[in-house]
Amino acid sequence: MRYEDKILELIVTSNEHLTAEQLFFKLKETYPGVVLATVYNNLGSLYKSGKIRKISLDGCPDRFDKNTKHDHLVCRRCGSVSDVYLADFTAAIEEQTGIAIDSYDLNISYLCPDCKNKEKNHQN
Ligand SMILES: [Zn+2]
Ligand SMILES: [Zn+2]
Image (cartoon, rainbow, N blue to C red; front, top):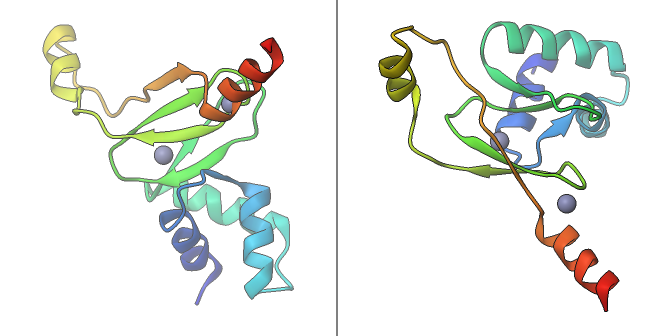
């Protein structure tokens, strides 16, 4: 299997929104000789061909995601990303703006359960 296929498989079967480095370590389990530059190159071409999504957030390394239509809950404290499946707003956006759009990224800010717990413990 080519690296690109394996990387795509790792992304599609994961809900973790992996960074290039995390993908590199997973890939190393199967291909000990792989180098990080190869992972970056393959991620670049997968992204360019529209097979994967990229999540870019301030202060976080890029994360990669399957290309099915969904949106993201992003923890404002730790930056963890969870999937949320909402209605597709493409038609509503196009209707309101009169412009054909390619895609949109909806990142919903919240406090994840882990951080919420930490905050609670901190207050007690
Ligand atoms: Zn959090
Ligand atoms: Zn996602």
